[in-house]
Image 1 (tube, one colour):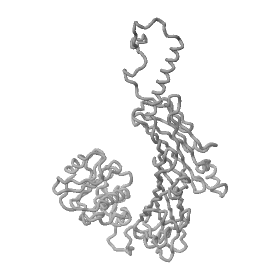
Image 2 (cartoon, one colour):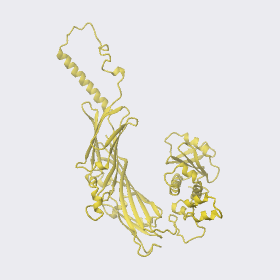
Image 3 (cartoon, one colour):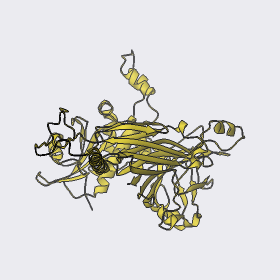
Image 4 (tube, one colour):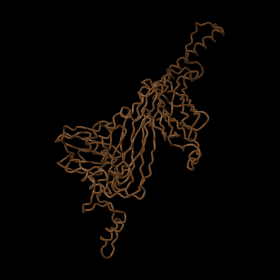
Length: 532
């Protein structure tokens, strides 16, 4: 599908235009485009079609760091291409201007921003988007050049300022640069290092009984290469069931353009590539955790298991959140383990695969809109608070309170519903019984004390039953858990080895042995949820 990107607009949090860059044609202006975009109700999709403009326009939008990025096109264009282009623009801005991106940075560095936009898209056709390649094309003035450029020195200040310009400025003289758009030319590092970080994000839905209904782990392999020359690297992955089954475990794999796909298809689990300089995303994947347990979920091991009991107390106004932390995650809480392992004594250090470390444990319990407040909040560990505006109960358990003799924690709360209407109030506000019916036909003191007691007991049981039914509607229906675990992955995928092929590499130097490191991290941003 052919098509071009005609313009890119950036708006701040106040809907003021920060930047408008036209690539080709006569696209809609920022002042004309923004009202048409805001006419659509929130949440607005990433792709909006405006049929009433001349010509009809496709609008691709993306929010990032309180900034709104909008790309327009009057021709048919692949939506993923336009959205990926916006993502690449954001990555390039963060690489050159620094994160977080704010409107002030873009306005004060327009010379760099204009060069980036012109190099990344030429006449509407997406061109160079790799940050390392842009380093060789975009001229960035160094801090010394900016300082001396603003001072009027005698002689030739321009030459003095230019002498202190950034070394990353592009050279007009062609050098022996490899044909790799993702790697800069003539890379030199004093300390050669290779790091691999695997991060998995959990998305788990549990039934009230605790049985998993769905469990997925979305993984990202981030690689950091600080090696001189042009290294050719081979990274081998393995799984608990062996390397030969890795292709069936990792669903929907995606790779950086530097990865040789033919090598992966021939030998699943083997990533062969010439990396960009610095940190980049090497690969991504998805793992379905339920096939590991035959679809039953009985052996699905999570760092934290949660259980909710509702309708507790004499009138069913209490509920309890019970938390069970895997003891394997509690074995690395002491600070002595990390210090002793530095000198070869003791066990593995905290946060390693041998001693995973659980932290940032937060439990969120949304409550119905009819809940007015929580009269009692009693956590056994950590701190809990209730936000009446958002109807949300948050329970924070610090890492320092997790290591203990027991791995079970609890939180018990009492809900308070809305105030009853005047017609539903059972007590007379005057206290003289004017609201009760009274007839003169009834005999004086005809009812015995026993009959009155039975009637009062029956009325009390009826009121309790009514309160139980009302409090049942105030109970939570779900709860979510957020946490992070260093040194553990839910899928069990591990890095077997990281090797540099000296025969295919160039410019490494003799006897260079880079330092290698691997880290594993599992996070859940409210992804583990249980239904009540």
